[in-house]
Amino acid sequence: MIKVEIPESIININNKLIALCDKYPIDIPLIEAANFLGMDKEGLRNSIERGGCQFGLCVQKNIHGNRAFKINTFAFYNWLTNGAIFRDIELHRYKANNLDNNIS
Image (cartoon, rainbow, N blue to C red; front, top):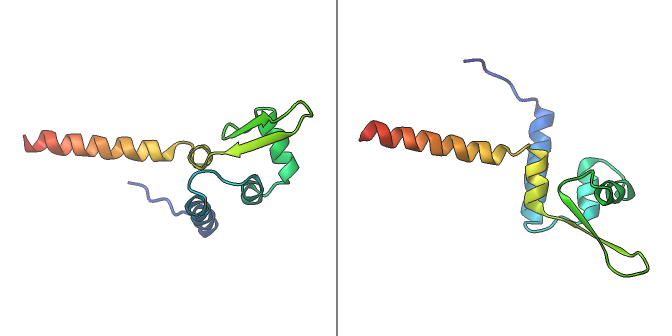
């Protein structure tokens, strides 16, 4: 088996992502998401509005064009990790099923 060393910078980013999700377990404020991504809040708003960020929703609040943005924490985490949580769940299920089959 090949061992891959994870750079400290990647570990730090992952820890920051976990802390952000723990702090905002339901929805992440747009400014916090923009800060995490290292981008301007207006840039993130525009990207969400144009459908470039699958984790965010934009709705027009009234006829004057006021908009509201929502960033669901689970969707944000899932997008940034490319669904790694589901791969881990499937791996655990696979291991559990194989363990059960070996016992029977």
